[in-house]
Image 1 (cartoon, rainbow, N blue to C red):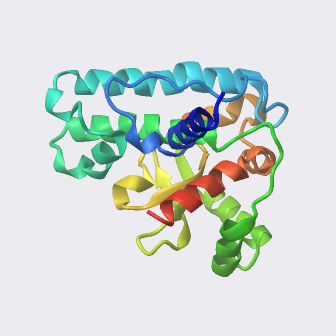
Image 2 (cartoon, rainbow, N blue to C red; image 1 turned 180 degrees about the vertical axis):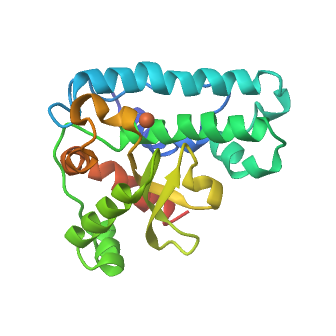
Length: 228
Ligand SMILES: [Fe+2]
């Protein structure tokens, strides 16, 4: 492969990795970068398989169904749909929130995990230290946020409108992007994400999950969105 083609390929991979935001109708299940068993023992094979092929697939199917009769929205990217969700009348608004959010959140979630152990570094690590004191303090606060979600929802590390890292939680499949925040790292704390292995022990799931965080991807998003 000559250098120009290699560069184009690298740019495509980078673009494809970071900009899940630019997905458009008709939506489909993404291909994972690892096998369903790759995150074991932290996230078990059965949970991964069910989570992707049943739960995520259902969000994709229902999102396509909701948009089928709205061709005027087919050219919108998933982030545009989610950012403008409040403008749409019910029941479309609810369908976009639940299923658009479900598709977007999960597409990110698969990327935010990896079987390769990694640690945060560079400017991202500095930003975390500036905002939370240390990486351990950040993990503690993020874990507390994930534990505090009553029922189904997510914990997130996001960039706010000033480019500052903040920890937030969302309920159901509400997405931070609807409130103008850029998600860098998200943790699904719906029971479907952990019940088969951890039953009611959400704290154990959260502790195990830190072992599979894909820090290079989180950092890539930080670098991309803090400069755009
Ligand atoms: Fe989920």
